[in-house]
Image 1 (tube, protein in one colour):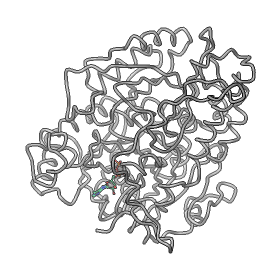
Image 2 (cartoon, helix red, strand yellow):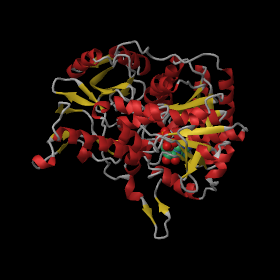
Image 3 (cartoon, helix red, strand yellow):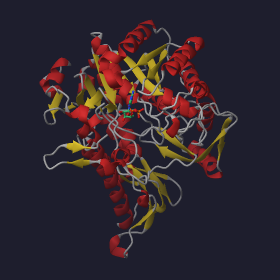
Image 4 (cartoon, protein in one colour):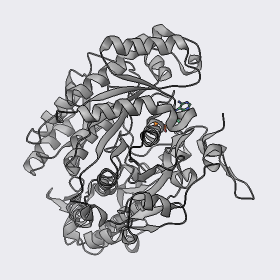
Length: 556
Ligand code: ADP
């Protein structure tokens, strides 16, 4: 089979004006960014406020493994399949980060015949949103350092500046840096850190904002650090929220593109799910749900991370909830959860599949706790054997769990018709409403305990001395009512990435808390979650090239 980029380059894309027309958008609702991309107006959501909302379908998965799960692929394939059923479906995805694109992950625009296009542009600079976030973030850093240099009226303690610089490239050399070296004219020296842009608070703020006004309010609320007497300092005190909003005004506008089968797709915002909240923007999902009868959207990594945050954080910010959840699993990944190494994945191994299915079982139980209708989608890979497929279908039947075998990777929407039909039925039959894992009135500690016990299956959470002090400090500062954004390894239900399958008898250790007041959540850092990834020994970028004629190579 052809590579993703080869398939994408052969796509028969429609001019973006035709996609906008299909959505019944009028001229002032959107502006073209070239022939195949557009930005939707930030006023569109309020204009559509009286329209009924379409059904929201959330795609999530088991814990990811190097074998691949294909959540984005299934999301795109399902959207296309719904259109085969003559349903007006819109897809809402995250924007890929250049860090993992150049590093290990490969693309984040789907795969095979279920991709969003222009795939190369989406995976690279796209419409510049992530660059705008990098610039806004670093402009604030410069503003803080300048404030300290120019007399420090706010009494900011340079050792307690929490605001970090960012870059959207994996660069381990920037994890710890010292800025302001070189004497009095070069600023006040202090330790600083770089984070990957997609883990920045500004990314989260942009993704959770409902409109320009809400964006400015959230930016104003960002706590950048603390004074010498430990009082929080926010952006409003620096008077910088106006300039930040200005720098982000175009990035706030959701991007419209299409799939290989010309299904409309809104791609906007791209926070990681392990160190950030892992969902595309509230504006993109809300607009998609107003424009389509169905919106298929995705939350990053497994249901323990992306879906948990979608359901506990994003639904509260956007005031909506999914009508159905699709849990993507692959036979390969379940075999890895059952103890098979990557090199042996092509060999049939039903026993390992049976063992690994326990990981799927935990995620099914988690979605059941949220009280949402769901279906398991088995994303079929070429090496899956009939015996393995039969086993997993039978396993789901015995568990009483709805299931669909999908092959949207090789067949496009046609390979997801059965899934689409079952999802439509789930949405139509939904009669219950979402149960959150915790109440906002719970203390920060209670919220963390509930997530670790209910969603991870842990015995509970322990807090380091530093985190314990912060629990007290945050309570005094009045932050208790905020939801919690867990930063945890994506590979395991626990905070130890080597514990695959369904571990039990473990506790989660919260090392540190961070107050993301603009985003409106408290980040709880567990294990060794890296907020600035490094590159692997052989980065994916080594395969990439562009010929003298401008033909792209090796972008997966
Ligand atoms: P996720 O969203 O879970 O990270 P993606 O949908 O981005 O996963 O897919 C990861 C990679 O796996 C992509 O390169 C995609 O082309 C590939 N892939 C996905 N589904 C299949 C499949 N059924 N068969 C072969 N390759 C697949």
